[in-house]
Image 1 (cartoon, rainbow, N blue to C red):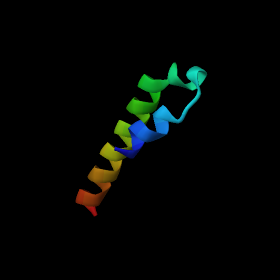
Image 2: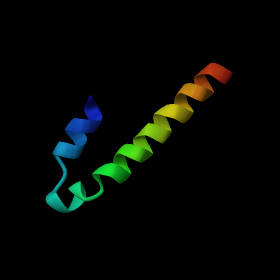
Image 3: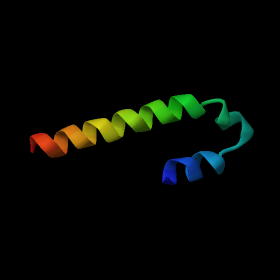
Image 4: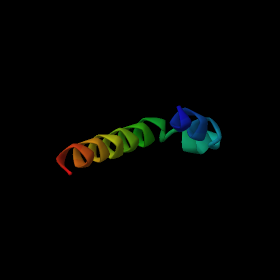
Length: 39
């Protein structure tokens, strides 16, 4: 998955935000899916 590739390319400092990034991406995908279904 491209998200893991993106996270792997981050610096060590950014890796501390791995969970945060994952949660944001999960929400974005969720909202995108809901919008696709509703529309």
